[in-house]
Structures are given as C-alpha cells and as structure tokens.
Length: 313
Ligand SMILES: C[S@@+](CC[C@H](N)C(=O)[O-])C[C@H]1O[C@@H](n2cnc3c(N)ncnc32)[C@H](O)[C@@H]1O
Image (tube, rainbow, N blue to C red; front, side, top):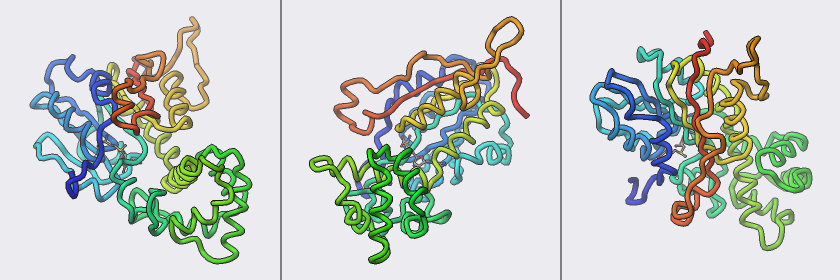
C-alpha cells in the first residue's frame, strides 16, 4: 500500500501460481524470479508457497516499487531493468532459475500517479518513463520525432485507425509551441479523436508512447532470449501480456524458440524447441475477475516448460 491506496491488484494470481508449478519438487533450494515486482502481489503469494531454502529474486526498474520491498530473508529486490536479468542474477551467484514470472506493462500505481504522465485523466508533465532517471521523456520524444516515426508508433503500438493523421496533428501543434504536458498532447490530438470514443482514443495514444519510450517490446525480446539459458529442463516461465504485439512475441517464442515462429525439426521431424507451451491457448481472467478488476480484461497468460534441448551459451 502507498498513501492508503492499493499499489496494484495482482492479475490472475492463482493461474500464475499454478503455472509455476511451485509445489511439485522437493525443497532443494530453488531460485524463482519475478521480473515485474510492482506492488509485490505476485511475489508475496509466491513466497508463501516457497520452501525455506528457496530464494525469490525480483526486478523492477521503477524506483517507486522499492517502497513495497518484502520483509523476508528469502527475498531480494533488484532495482534494474529486466532486460539485464541474467547479468544481475549472475552477480548474485544465480545461474539457474526454476520459475520465472513476467507481468508486463505498467502498474496501477504508475497509471494513478498523476505526476508520472501515464494517465489521460489529469494534466501533468509528459514523462511516461518507468525509470525516470534514464532514457527520453515523452515531451522530448514528441519534440524530436518526425512524421514517419510518429506514424509508426501510433500505428503499431496504439493501433490507431489513422496514425498518419495523428502524426501530422502532433507536428502541426508543435509549430505553435512545445507539447510539454498531457493536457497539451490531448489538445493537439482532439480533432483526431472519434466522437464518443475520445477516452479510448487517448488511451491508445498514451499506450503507444509508453511502449515506445520504455522500449517494452525490445526489453521483452531480450528477457525471453535469456530464459533459454537461465531456465533448466523442467523449469517454467509464466508471462502475462496486455498488448497483442507482446502476446504474439511470447506465443511465438514459447512455441518455436524464436520470434519469427520458425519451427526447427530434427531428422525424424520432432520439433527442436527450447520451450514447450503448457496450454494451447492463452489463459484469460474469469468473468468475476474481469468484473472486479478491469485491468485483467486484456490480460493474456501463457506458460511454457523448458525442454531438454541444450541451453544457449
Ligand atoms: C503490471 S506491473 C506488475 C504488478 C505486480 N505483478 C504486482 O502484483 O503488483 C508491472 C511492473 O513491472 C515493471 N516493469 C515493466 N517493465 C520493466 C522492465 N523492463 N524492467 C523492470 N521492471 C519493469 C513496472 O515498473 C511495473 O512496476
């Protein structure tokens, strides 16, 4: 809890725990990783089910998440981007991970903290970095991006119907002055918002900028590639996505070990893949959870188990 408000309500908690197969092996001192610690809801539940010799390593690049650190000697929070997970784990002497959880995207806290610039609901400086100490703010990016770049981001990450028009609207607005606040960005794009669907339109625009600025897809690719080396045979990864592009990367990687979904086979025709999906389809939140936690509606949970194929170096 922060300021008396829940930092984040964990999504699909039980399916995530089931996916990691926490209780099936002897307590031999296993390593688990939660690469998206946030408010610690998933981590707390994992700790409750771990043995006394197991360890839980958590990552979060947002300095605000530090305030939620869990008081348990089996727990360590590493305040870093999960794209460097393997290196930081190695620094702690960890080279094998028996279960890894990624609950992607931003937390409710990040959305609700008006001064972070993620929310369309209040006027605030346009920042949108999960780690405000590094990278480019949304205001700086919007100052420099050209029309093709703006169009690409609005098209692929925001799924806007007319990304080119939105891009030109940003450039036109820039001619009259810098776009420095969430209110100024909304003002610049008001003419593009379909009538009656303004909230959805602005949410898509803000989501697009957030994904770009935090290189969310690049970080996810790097994380997945590291899982092949980190997770030994029988270990599992559990990944929850909130955007179709993320889910596609996860689905392809779990099925074929690459993002192009190129399935390699041995001479007998058996698939040569480092992971095997545990469920054929993505798991979604049940009706009750979707009613009580709207954030869960777009969540897609996938689980895969490491096969015997030898790990990458
Ligand atoms: C959806 S929230 C996770 C919520 C968490 N499962 C809980 O129960 O509270 C995602 C969290 O992951 C963090 N995050 C997103 N991308 C990250 C990355 N590349 N490296 C480290 N942390 C990241 C965000 O800062 C955010 O706190």
